[in-house]
Image 1 (cartoon, rainbow, N blue to C red):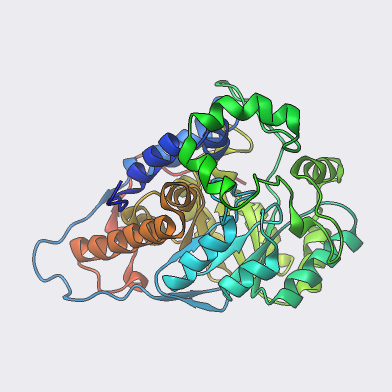
Image 2: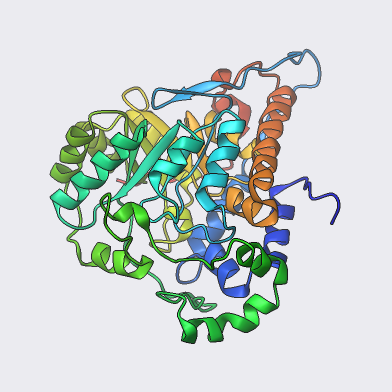
Length: 389
């Protein structure tokens, strides 16, 4: 296809589905159990309206802001997502795209590329940490992220290991040995462009997670690291405070939905909170994050930076989230669909779509800056909001 530009995230998703092997695409879509939370993340934004202005709109709009001490060109950060096997360049391409558009990127502990390569591609990298293994193991990962030059830490705590899906979970092998390759061969052959993108690099996806190893150690397999995570007792708030003290820098607690948890995160020393339900991949039945956002923002927004993660697909979603109390949003699936559709350029395309959408929405509602947004700019239907805890 000569012109690989796309005009919306939805188009990027359709192209990703056509390009990726079925198992890879289904792993990307994910969603746990019935998928109710995943669907509500999207539906909730559609329920919110906007209050337009028809004359006197500002001729220019200010989109830039800061998050976790980093200046970003518009209020979007790439959310950390694991093992980006949708493209051989994976997290490095995503980081490069984010850097080219002046925004920060999160890097997962379960990423397919080492933190050192990703920070080299984008110095504004936040390292995402799971509570997995011993304190010594976790401290080692924190020190590796610090040595690599990461500028912030994100602790993801919202995980209940709910994996069953009503539409069936995709087959993901622990390693691509001969048996796994034979099983996946029909899917890969049916997507020759994706297969060729890997074959010309001389290697298939390794399915390892190098950031779960200390420097010099062999990278464990995804499922090996996942098993360690599952067997580690859940973090306490004392553990969170220990992570904050060990990192000694901007620190985000990701996965907060309840007001009482938000307050505990503040007490533990967090400087930022991500109102997140893991994109619907965790406890199904959790409300859409944008429904829970206002209560959390009202409770702690004057003490920490509050970020919204979940369901953002267009610039108007960013504006709606900011009007309801978010300082910025994080996007996970959308950049991966762009990456699958067209590599680094596809991620840049997604970010351009979001930036343009933020700008056009600000014009439409008569705001000259993202910092002017308030609840007066959105139409919130009766019964929309949820306050937990």
